[in-house]
Length: 138
Image 1 (tube, rainbow, N blue to C red):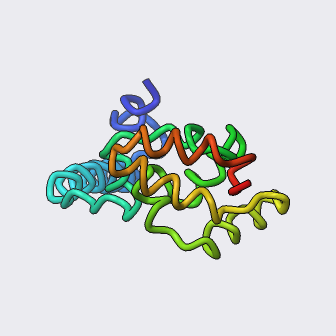
Image 2: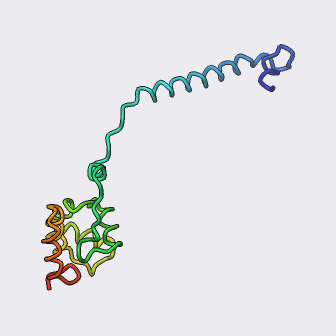
Image 3: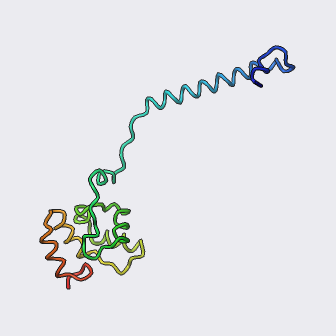
């Protein structure tokens, strides 16, 4: 309503109608440019860690010595599968654990277990776990 009143010749401020039209055209131009820019936008590249997320995440808690807290810390650190854990160094895993203040944990036995699980050797994994206590060789 105010817009129509400003555009009519009857109002006292008719000398500023050109400014109202200029603002309206500027706004329309910005909307059109934004729409065109969104059409030309290239798809963004996926983050580096999303490759492992395309595969299913393995249940890392199968590994003797890994519980829900440790599994969460490992996944936040980029270790989502048995293969990821098998290829990680004990130093890297221990660094993730120390950063999460889980200093009592030791990843040395987890990597061997993860290598068996990544190969699908669940019988070998179960046998290894029977010889372990808390993820460490007894």
